[in-house]
Image 1 (cartoon, helix red, strand yellow):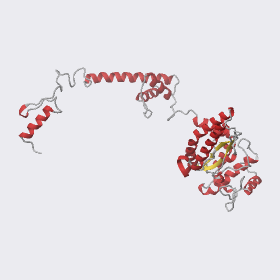
Image 2 (tube, rainbow, N blue to C red; image 1 turned 180 degrees about the vertical axis):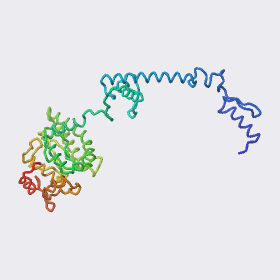
Image 3 (cartoon, rainbow, N blue to C red; image 1 turned 30 degrees about the vertical axis):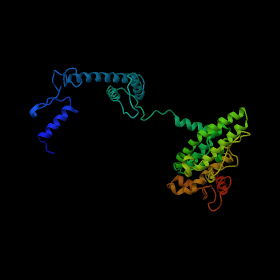
Image 4 (cartoon, rainbow, N blue to C red; image 1 turned 45 degrees about the horizontal axis):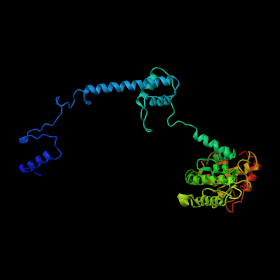
Length: 368
């Protein structure tokens, strides 16, 4: 676009009356001087007192350095006093009221402080990376162990011995905490051999959906213990149905999670809890004698031997997943068995592992 006298005049008129009211336009195309700039009279630019002034910047840097030095000194004092670097860091952050995000890295004053301590020859132990371990995983394992007894640990050991411990897991098909609250001794056949994906993802998500229903179930049971009314019994029937339906349909996950768990219901009359099979694949259950519980299966008892032999029988078909070595040799020591622990060509037994496999195990006198 070419600018002629007319266009220049219109542009100047727009600028005079429009958005650029602070500019001063000079005639005949002379240089337009902006207000302020570095003129000492206006106080703008790099003048004394301005944040952008070099002297002001120097003063600001001195203050920041002094503050950092104070944090370094405090950090070193705490570490020398016996705190770990991470403990000292937390105390410094709190004392100086520092704001730090969870994703922030190591503070500069902490890095300087640790280096100075090393230069001074002070010996300290580096803190472990990551969040502090408060024993959450260990506490959960201990709590579960109290509820299901030591049998579970023995079953896990035998599973690991097969070399398939990372592929398959020993799963709780019924909520162990709800069973405990309802006074149910955890049955051995409520344990099952499942893949990690099913147990850790699918079943875990379904169990999370059941938790509020189990909480409601327990509330109604406690009310019925005080006053058994028809309305409360109907309410318990309804919550039993919702729990069973959620398990049968797979909840929000649909078919992928259908019947991967077993529901716990409560009789509205006698208020006794019961674990139902519904559509659960019972061939994956850990089998023992009917009614056997994890509490009663002491080491060396028939239920202990049967359940451990059954776990081996379920994993035997997957021997090709095990590298050559002690684990494969261990699996080969047992007769061929299907996923149910019995002969692949025939139907699985109703209870107990492959009788031939168990007899073979007992004749060999093998410790498992």
